[in-house]
Image (cartoon, rainbow, N blue to C red):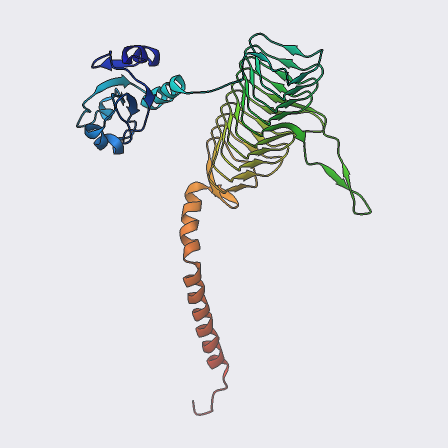
Length: 353
């Protein structure tokens, strides 16, 4: 693609020759002739003079102007990181299944399949299910009876979309995702056994949600589990039954949300963090890595630790925690001295003293 066309498609201002042919996108250090690189951080600005890239994406703001410019064309933009992401999408090489329904797939006679879909081999689509236009379904996907999938979705291999699950438009499910699995609900009986609570209620995934590999979204016994528009979920995340997740939420790898919890809009949860059941995480709150949230968190708060507390308080506490062995030793020494003094004071005094 000519750099001139690329600049137009990315909405960047071109500085230099527009006739350069761009073949791929690469990092600033590894880029060669034909590559487009980018710099969105000042710490990489020193790499610019020596880059072999044919063009570089740079910021437009005065603070983004490096001391030394590269010896190649430049694409200027107010948001170089976003321009880089869009460029990657333009040059991505994907191999979706061919248009239509592969002859090795099983589609129920009453399933509704939209125009221009791509359904690979060994896909099973249950009775009464519906698939939106231009949706891509890779091999070995199972879509249960009555499930609904919107337009322009991408469903990768080995995904299981259980019965009556509803997906909006432009949803992406990566390999191994399970949507609509049974929530973990049991009642302990007098004889010690556990009676299963049937989990048959709704799961709704709204528009523009992306869910990473091997994540599980459970269904509740009543009500619904809902993930609202624009939320992005990383690999190996568990969303339990009856959870409500707001818009534009970010859940990173191995985090877990227990049942009936409410996560409001724009919350960010770092890796291996967890939230107990029946609590509310306020809009814009952040949860640090490996943190355990055992109570509700107010909007805009940043909490970390186990149990999670205000991040500033946790940082102070973590300093004390590292000093606990030496503090304990000092306490033990002081206790020994106090005991010795008490023994001396308890000794009977002689008459002449």
